[in-house]
Image (tube, rainbow, N blue to C red):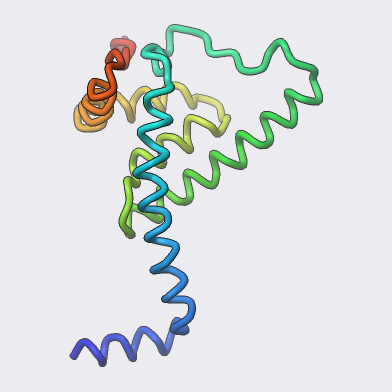
Amino acid sequence: MISDVLAQIESYVPANVLIWFAVSSVFMFVGTLIAIPIILMRLPADYFDIRKPRPWMENHHPVLRLLGHIVKNVVGAIFLFAGFLMLFLPGQGVLTMLIGLSLIEFPGKRRVEAKIVGQSTVLSTINSMRAKFGKPPLIIAPDR
C-alpha cells in the first residue's frame, strides 16, 4: 500500500525533487531552531508596541538606505516563504513567518505584527523563550 502511494507520488514528482525537499526541510528545521531564538532575543521588548515609532536607517546615506531596504525585504520574503512551507514541513512556521513579516515593508504592517504576536499562544511561546535567556517579556499595545 505505501509503495503504491510512493509510486503514485513519483509519477507526479521525480525522486530527486522529493529528496531535495526532504534535505531542504531538515536544513530549514535546524536553521529555524538556531535563528529564531537568536532573532527573538535581540528584539527590544517594545518592538511590537505600535505606539512607539520604529525608524530604520534614517541617518544613513539615501543609496545605502535604499539598498538596505531592498535586502531587508528580500530576506523577509525568504523567511515568509520558508515559514509558509514549514506549516506543512518540519519547522517553526508561524514564528518564521512572523520574522519574515517583520522584515517586509507594507502599509499596516505594524498592526498585523501586533495582532499576530498578541495571540496568547504566540506571545506566551516568545516570552517563555525570552525568559530562558533573561530577556524581558514583549510589550504589546492594548487594543483601542
